[in-house]
Amino acid sequence: MDVHTKEILILLQSGTQSLQQAEVQRRTCRSMSAGSSSVQGGHRSDASNRTSAKQAVMIENHRTFTIAIPESLSWTVYHPRVSEEQELLLHWNPHQSIKDAVESIGIPHTEIQRYFCSSEQVPESYIVLPGDELSIEPVDALPYSSSRVFIADTHLGKLATYLRLLGFPTLYQRDWSPGELLGCAHHSGAVVLTRSRELLKRRQLEQGMLIRSTQVDDQLVEVFIRFALQDHLQLLSLCPHCNAGLIGVEKDDIIDQLEPNTRQWYQRFFRCSQCGQIYWYGSHYEQLTTMIGTITDRISNL
Image (cartoon, rainbow, N blue to C red):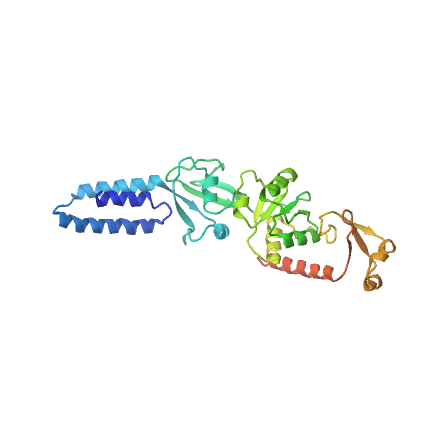
């Protein structure tokens, strides 16, 4: 195998490398070619070299494609494949859809609003062609819907609790398998909240959100922004333990269930319609209102 043949093979294997890296390898091959030619006592003509270079460029253009990554989604891409220009050069695979191409670099389809090829909108089923210049538009803030229900994966129990406390129905079970969670999401129409890219890549999943932070207050900010929740709070309307509705209850009807200090200082109470847990406007309510103020300030300053 001569060096020029090796040069073309390098180009075929450089789908995940940048154009600059491929150029360095091409120059190295050419340098090696010059040295080996003197040893072998001959060299190719200039015309032959120009033809070989042209063929290499053609191979490069027909074996790769690019995806432009919006800055807001760069954190979702598997490191370190995003360049400073936010454009990724990928090896072309036959029969690969634009959805599959984008998900192969770490971005679930639930985070994409629209797909584009050469600035023209295409469906997620569009089959990528060699040389394509692809781009994506991230999901923007969605309008608030009073019928929206969330479903949190097994690692987001605290987020589920706080969303319930703030009045947003959230399904959650600590022992759910991925299949059970997806099945529940499908039947209920709930929006899946998770930190798992792989879960959100499931084709049957229609609505979901990839949570970035590991801290619950930051997670709440993310969810509030995506689903425009900040103006629709209903504190102490849902049970944080089972997600059922809370109903007002007379103090005299539950007084035997209250601690002495609670009986003395609090007058308004609520009971879960399903599990029977009792709630009142205590210190936890004050903590919630403080958290809401912090979240609102953070969102307004973005």
